[in-house]
Length: 160
Image 1 (cartoon, helix red, strand yellow):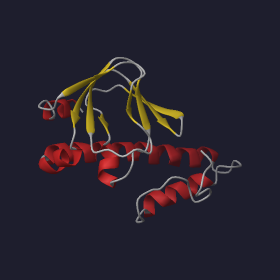
Image 2 (cartoon, one colour; image 1 turned 180 degrees about the horizontal axis):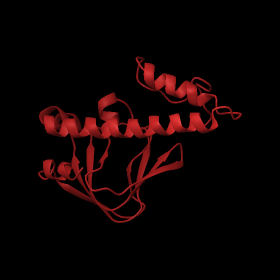
Image 3 (cartoon, rainbow, N blue to C red; image 1 turned 135 degrees about the vertical axis):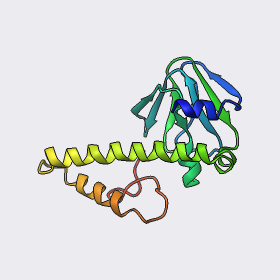
Image 4 (cartoon, rainbow, N blue to C red; image 1 turned 30 degrees about the vertical axis):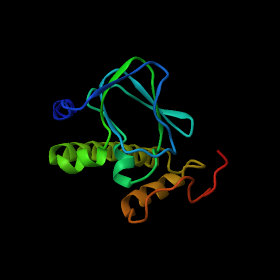
């Protein structure tokens, strides 16, 4: 991802103080951010799911590619500097190297999630409540449906 910093060196930098929100789950936007330094916490449905600290990490790429609202809220947990492309789609369309970095990053994340789910299935597949892991793995392997929406097949209209 350090190459991403070089590829995006021309973008303007923005600073975030601890506690400032970069993007909110459910809101729409066209921006793409590249972390230069600092730490960002990622929340899905109010639950912390990740901390982003690697220089060159991207924020907002999935919503751009899926033409959807942000899938998570991202908040600075310490002072941060990010590079910002106000028109993230134009940046992705205009530079094949950046688009490739985005694709590789997403493929790496999908590989980690799929491997983790497969490990859960292997270790705990017969435990009560874990039958859904097989369903998730099947869905990932067969995914040819419209973009994701809030909720799930089990609860299409969650109360959150």
